[in-house]
Length: 511
Image (cartoon, rainbow, N blue to C red; front, side, top):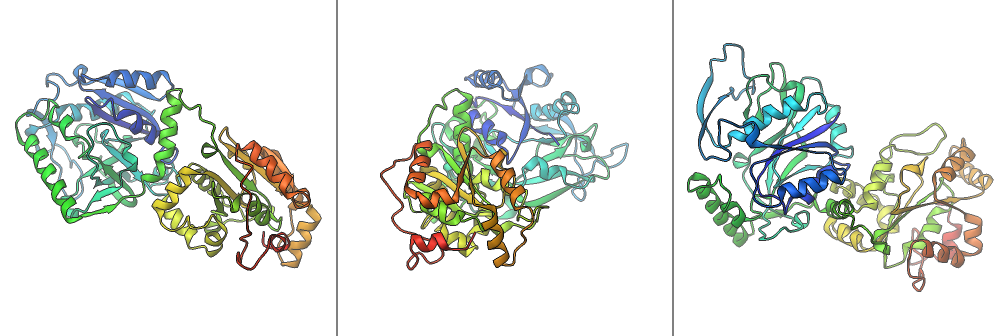
């Protein structure tokens, strides 16, 4: 189901590129942005125009065109709205006796909600009403738009809890690298929402924080969804915004600044590391959109070694990539989450492709990282020390070329890209079958599985050839990946790195 984002922007040119590209990444999967420019005086319109010309799904509107008779960004304006009962967030039945007039600080936001629901028609099944200083955090394995489509029909909205980030910068920073999160009591936390378009009330809006739903619809809250709110992002710029004035909003900013300084003094923060995983992907996406993605160094490349079980791929991947200090080598990241078995007898999880793509982009969610770290073999056979902490894991990944070994992908075509080389390691089918029989494993479909992987890979290497000439095979791969040929794998790691030799690894029956 398509997910759209609607927001009012004012003087956000410095922050828009990263915010747009982050929410376009597959883990969120926004289909369209409805951007309502509130008479910006910086280059906000220019940034949105550049992204539109570059193919980003951005539709632009002006608050002045629909927010009349309310002047844009006035401090206090009277607006009609419904103040719903807190019990069920429903507008109730006609004649809506609880309708009231009250001072609405941001009437353009209310009108934006009404306008977005009207102009989007059927193009947007779900709306996220978030600001440009707010990043949707989704920790689930499936993309957010897929997760939303799995909700029950009576779920009209999802609440997003603000996690207040402590980043304070005078110029546009790499926000996704800022991990300090303010510790706040839950009763002071704010909420935003993602709502189903057909569940929105036809007459009343309520507020941007909790859209009123039709009768019979309800909100839910899920632990995998949060909102990283960079409200301390740039105090000086916020003081200059027209809606601040000299009233309560200006006083609130001064209070926030005092709270931030006090929190830093007493260390009242934790590290919100879930956004950190997407920093590299967002940076690359911004560069591609601006036509600047011309890098071709080893750190911008990746390689996936795909094979069948009992094929010798553990030895091959370890000898070629596992002991290099300039390679981030990850052993079987899907092994800890495998739960499906395909028709040809290979352990195969359809979510494995998503996990591999995340690993190649150094965007592995924290929950997946924790699951892999619980697998003793993955920790022993991957690059040394990378599982020390999640922050160390991601930052090490960003600095090196990424290599992943897996036997749990049947069709690797979706992995091959300009940045990723897919290498199929193929062992003689009779040897694979004999090894499986010795281990009392299913031998059905070995040849068919090899054919699938051979067709979907960029390169096929026979294990027998690699064992006969390991140095020549490694040199060939290093050349394709622009890796230095000087550094060779100095020692084996296999299951018992201190006792096994490379010869023992070559004879090891594991995978």
